[in-house]
Amino acid sequence: MICSSDYVGIAETGPTDRLFASLEDMFQREIGAIIFTCSTFNLATRQAKRIHTNQPDAYPLSGLKDVETSRWTETVLDRGETFVANTIDEIAQVFPDHGLIAELGCGSVINIPVLLGGKTLGTVNLLHEDGYFSADRVERARDHRSAAIIAFAALNMSTSA
Image (cartoon, rainbow, N blue to C red):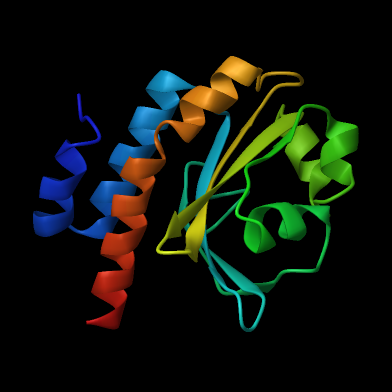
């Protein structure tokens, strides 16, 4: 079992795909998710890139996508706050792929912004059945931000080297 403190060693020695797989394992054990993804954002161009997924057929690692301004972007990218929606109707208000989300058995989402030094490095995204993200689960997910910061910082260092 990998703990948050173990991420420093992995970040120093292993490829970032191993680091994000370990991050997913931790979130799955502690919170659970039907869909688990991680994304990076270029705030200047308002583009997103998926960098990790447990559903590669539905949510592949490919290209950049434009991020439209919405309540989600204002919450997560502009203010750096966690976004939670616990019904498919709430999800439909901010995600155009809400039909696919519902088809995959999901009706709730939590998006955790990963911030370092005031800069948004990316998000950790968990989706599950309707009503899944209770206040307790949201708090436990937020408690794992330090491991996510290490993973995203390692990715930034490997891509800028």
